[in-house]
Image (cartoon, rainbow, N blue to C red; front, side, top):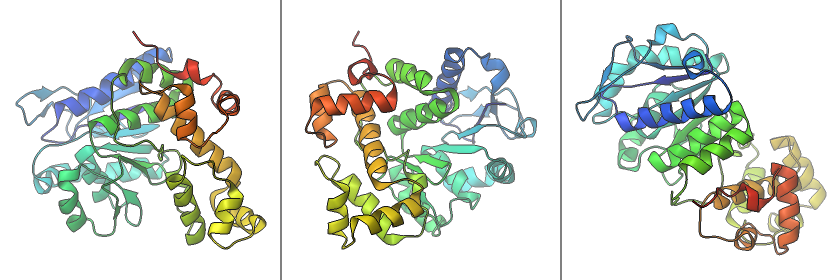
Length: 316
């Protein structure tokens, strides 16, 4: 099974259908049979009642899935206490899949189920903002960041609401099926979405669990100053290090040279901006710290495989 989608009770039908439709479309773009590679599951294999009175259809139970490349946890509605009590039998199942290498993506309140497994203890997470206080009280060991739209704790991913869930789902399906599939999904499903965030943190969160506080501070400094033409030398000076020392510590902590990391951060952020209408390529380039648009376009093409103008979804 490539993808499993867990439906908690009471379900938010919109969340489950959104995930399912995107997964099916991605499979079709990848020339796969969705019926063979995607399974929507409940605890028992029975349909799940939604808060609006609709039954959410499933095509299996958690017992039918013992391996998957990707697990999505859709949102529930209402009391977290009741939802977690009903979903308790699924927690060991989620733990087992994660231990076997399955990437887990929880959408909105579905983050409560992921946190209840204990897998997020000591790791970053986000959740649906109205539930943030309850989340903190219930899971004090989780490093909750409700101001973040998306987090990735080393393959354990969270999105705070429906718009960010769209981005998270498409990013995960891009990792599974390839960048071309992700671009087609973005063109078909993200048109008109107005994000409240611009920095593409998702691709970089997993490189922040290294324990070097200075390097982590540099990573965050890069994010805060991304719209400026900063250099690695500027970061070294800011933190009282030589460029050589910063390069050595940064590479040891993240597995990537700081110059390469900064360049990739710029390009990933540019991709998020290009997916939205209203900005020219030159404006996007300046927004991610490039003074020279030609240099930006060359770097973007080298990293992504297409020119920035071709990456942008077509306007219909």
